[in-house]
Image (tube, rainbow, N blue to C red; front, side, top):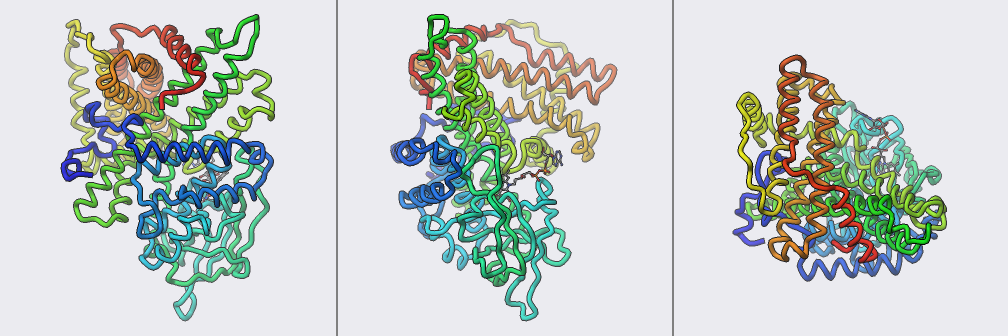
Length: 603
Ligand SMILES: Cc1cc2nc3c(=O)[nH]c(=O)nc-3n(C[C@H](O)[C@H](O)[C@H](O)COP(=O)(O)OP(=O)(O)OC[C@H]3O[C@@H](n4cnc5c(N)ncnc54)[C@H](O)[C@@H]3O)c2cc1C
């Protein structure tokens, strides 16, 4: 990144809500450079050849096959994209790592989980927090696929409450090693990994500590049977038991008591990459569903000609388009923030850590939004296939089952929804994002007389951008008043937090799509972007409806009398369209293009 870019005042995490973004400042999939495009192509080729062609093997719990294909991915360098060159990796930027994660994940959730657990939570804690010796010793092997990693945080009694684990680490009398004893569960890659990142508590410490533990069965490590799961059938998931497992003090990650921080930061990266991992699955489902709908004849016509099917195809295409827009926008923000920090003198390790932490709100937003879109898309995929969709002989059924886990791991969607709002409020309290100023301004605006001028909406997205600005006001009004009312007690009002979070999510996703399309319309022309314009409009309309619903629910839950009446009036004013889009026509336009292309062709 040039010094100019490094100096550029890029948006900080959470600031999208209170600052306007120019479309030229967002990164889009259309901005990929030559190297990234080649990377995408070789990833797709790998997936088609090694994974997609064998999806039945993944369904038949062929764990050895997952390991074999992971090793092949390692040979091709696909496991090392995010690893710095000094540790045997390719040292590519954050966007490239997202790209590989995206396109490698579409064929089967089994491989996608193994890949994510290894390259993300299995490797990142060492690259982000490891000492120089630890990085030299472990990272090159993990990057090449000679070794595989797993991440042991969850325990039977410690899931969402991750810092409450009971696994103990006891220092030996000579002070040279720790003895780890405890039970971990739901550990991805446990069946074939060579090392674990293990979180354990030393004495009665408030926070857990991280350790690198080599997988040596003669050192008190035993595995449970493979879990019988709804989906991701060939992803190895087992319990791991540590019984007085000896670990040298040199294998402590970072410092004593820093484990919870490591765990959470590894999860921030994991969350945005999980969003990426839910993109190509959607594209492939749309591709298969479109082909099927174009060929399947009922009532003497391809079912694609029915409005009921068109509406599904349009919604599916719109969701992945929006998801791509937001995922790559945030990825580039992270990449730029890392470069800025490096230019300021931070090591790559510190810069990466802080860069991702800065956008933790966006990481949570993406994790929730994209995993839920993936679930809906695979569900409608089954519906389009009708009875055949319910059959295990078509890939729709497994796609639906595989996608379900994305709402659970890397922090459940409930936890991530609350985190997104909670982190934003904390940032505001620390003065990192000025929520209070804009929230007060919104309050004052509500007391004033609304403008009755007829606005000029002739330019592309003029009305949409105006609505988006007002949707942000809905969040500021609802969250601002709720913070004033409840202060730090707000987090106890979970249903209110969830409603506020849904508003936040819709704003970020809708804005990302509008900005991507606006940028592309300016350079490629509006005609070339006609379908993308339709998708952006359709999404914004649906987002506005969700915000009306969630806003109402939130306001009524905590405001009464005149305050409630004023806020409901504000909600109406802030969500008003002057010219309603014809969503039926938009869906038809989108579906007709997807049908003509026989799949999703906007990436
Ligand atoms: C296939 C699979 C692979 C996994 N891989 C790994 C891995 O490699 N390493 C690892 O460490 N873990 C792994 N996990 C564990 C996963 O991260 C946890 O399952 C997840 O964090 C949820 O914890 P839990 O299952 O204990 O659910 P719980 O925490 O018991 O949650 C149950 C329900 O209660 C809700 N809930 C809990 N607390 C709150 C709260 N404070 N407020 C509101 N709602 C709440 C949750 O959202 C959820 O709906 C994996 C799990 C699965 C199923």
